[in-house]
Image 1: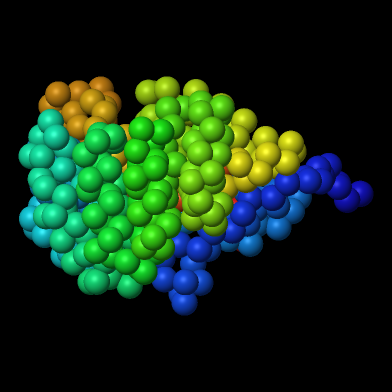
Image 2: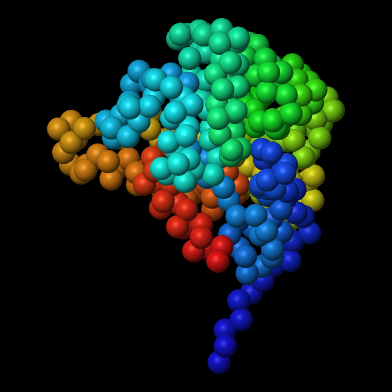
Length: 314
């Protein structure tokens, strides 16, 4: 006797948003069912994976990441190309860590020039993240939007304190924005409303609900993301019917567990395997919660997560 799975019909739908060069047709979102519930509704665009690139060598880095990228991390262009050519990256996330006003405090002009070089050197969509410093990101990301006009970069984090300046630049120079709020469904909705009132079309907005790594508050992140997706799919909340992006690698590889060596933590086992699994399980949890893009750092993680996505969306 055949078993028929119970199915739910959803009245809402996640908007499909183009990322990168529109001619290449890379879309995220478009879901007509809950995350990876392909048996209940159409999921036309599987979740996407971006790979991390930093604009300057990291000061505090896990040994496994150092072994992978120390030959290229003096040059973000070469680093990005390595991720694409050797690891099959389908998107690149460029982290402008050097612009941190509490660190190197690199100028907006220098940062924008780096972004432009990377954008011109790769043929996959480019995501650009600032440092979450409201004032500095306003200056940096506005200039990035200008010098990369028409390339449809994905720019973030856009926060309540700087959404007007960065949002206006995104409208003028045709980029997508990442609306970032501190793990709260109401704040996420409110920022999307503010961006809409400014004139940013829904088709140019991604939601970054903020997340932590496995063991660092991920259950709260999962719950908020789940509520965002439920409101979008079952309550017809148009301002939450947008794809979500999660910056996983950044959160995972800064944790103590990901950086400790075998000598420092012998009971935790092989440090490379430990870090990869921490990143992979974090990404898998967030994909199940509704993430449409996850940003990862280790190529072995990319393989694991890509395999999981392919198996669940086949």
